[in-house]
Image 1: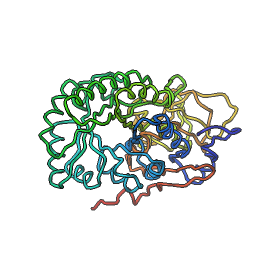
Image 2: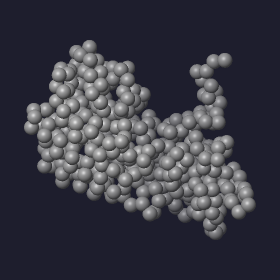
Image 3: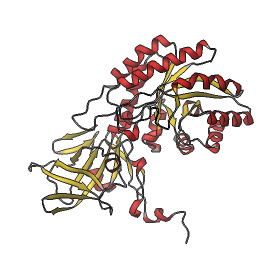
Image 4: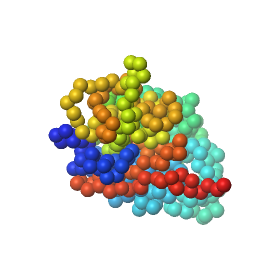
Length: 412
């Protein structure tokens, strides 16, 4: 939902230059229409297949984004007690919440049980024992799925690949049946699913389909042994195209490839998309502070930094950078850098880009996922505001932090 009309870049019907002038920079901007369209693409494509679309909160945990999806009927995939708190504050239904993650604490499990979540994606036998003990104390039964590790290469960045045997996530799929069998002794657990998630920013769905085949085979074997398996949790992982060279299947085409395999299984399905719902729906708006040259090297210094968007520094990630107002000048090649006292503080390196001047605004595209949620106060920089656009209207849904916010909770 970001496009030019004339020479002005818009988010839906809002010119970003006007928004930036009023909200200040740096600022995160999200398109509500894009978020809802991507969520509905999953929900509609799954159609009459029993399903639940659980948005992966870790991708973007803004209360306004969560509320938007909750009103649309979404469930939520969480990985912490804090994310559960956010979902509840945003009006999400706890009975549509799945708790994933490799290191759940006793306090987090207690909170989830008290809130009445849908179930747990479990990653170790120790975790199963903990949930059983805490559920027994409350006099309830907890539904669980074991997250199996299928040893499938997601062919993505090593930091966000999770499906190989050397990764910390899940239980080796070859050992899973024995773990389910031993879990029978836990009287307050109900084995109602099998979970599998192999990574993030996957552009070729073939590894996901390979993992699905293995999960379906395991679920069938477990049901034959008398386990009450009712659903498959396939996680998320579908990527977005951050540049024109990257191609990813449209959500309906991807889901149809899943449906063909799931129809035969007789199982319900849970999917946990995050990036593919919010990634392209967001942008980070920055103002150009300075232009400088060191020898043959050109630098564009902006007021957004690695503390605002760490993906380029952390992953070497590419984000398209567009002028909020186009000009007819020839392009330049420059590093786009921020004010932080680190050579690793950059948003782009050796990037062909518009010849922009101090005071101009830039839009760093596809920043709706793993943008603000990974931001920090490094160099004592207040975090940016978040803005939600709805048609021709926009509103600040998280205020810009102040210097007073930086020291709140500290003492001398």
